[in-house]
Image 1 (spheres, rainbow, N blue to C red):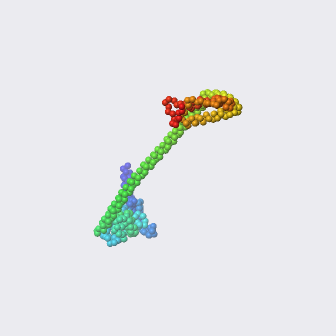
Image 2 (image 1 turned 30 degrees about the vertical axis):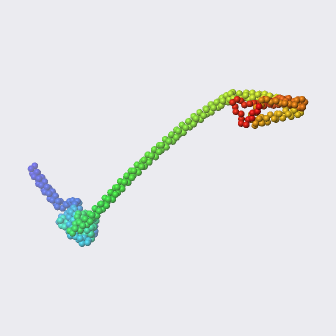
Image 3 (image 1 turned 180 degrees about the horizontal axis):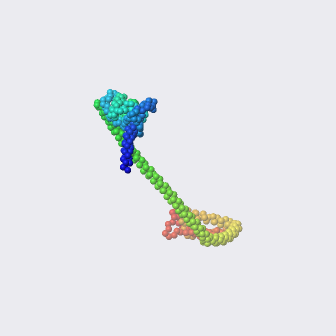
Length: 435
């Protein structure tokens, strides 16, 4: 048992030693490359790059590689960014104005072909400080070249454009060196003669002037906008008032139309009532007319008819009386005519007396008052008068005939005409009184 354990430990030791030797060997020939580095294995068989060049190395980026012992050597190159501070003093710009420029650039070694081959050819085995010095010198030279083509105003006013032109100018040179410019920023541009300060003061004055103008314009625009808003508000108020007035007018019109319809209906009702009342009054007036007609018939017409009938009867009676009187008068006149023809000259005397009676009244009226106490007619008597009577008899007979024929009492008329005036009366002027 003891004899068997001893060889086992020996074998185990030999295996461990072999493993250590193998691990050391692998450690020397196996290389692992991080993403921010590039491994360059030199001494391999030649190969052709992407741009057609023939090289005797191979590149491993972000992986692992086996080195052929005794035939290949391994180098590495850092691909991280290198920050370079640029400071150019006394660089003349366009117009002969010396400027001082401060800037910062970020450069790196490219990891892609074909630029990496340029970097390997120039910087393989060099430190980062040496690479940064080369890049700095290159950028400062490009910076001076770009400054000579720009005025101080252009450099100071638009640093982005200045940095862009500097990047374009330096990109070609850095590409030839195998470097890539990631970013370039111009931090500050100054001058020792005060040119930029003068420009700044002019610019500041211009800016202040523009600011004052802009402020005045802003105030004017604000005031204008304020008044525009006020006008708009007032117009809105007026429009609202107009709309309210229009609505009020519409309401008033609707109320007026409603009131008009109500008034029309009311007036129509009143007219209908008046018409009905008038028709009732007409009916009542018709009844009254009938009543008045009946009343007139009873009070006026019938009495008038009766009076008319009575008047007709009276007229007929009067007419009959007149007829009878006319007949009697005609008879009297006929008798008078016969008597007149029969009486001869006595008839003429009677007729003459009838004519003289009115004349005597006129004559007596013209000679005034004549008092006759007694009238004596003296006749011749005997048979001297026609008819065999006296003149007095003839006068009396004629007076009686006139009275019978005409109803005039000649002696009475004479007495009234010749009667003395009453006591207390004054006889008319020109009256003659006889005894």
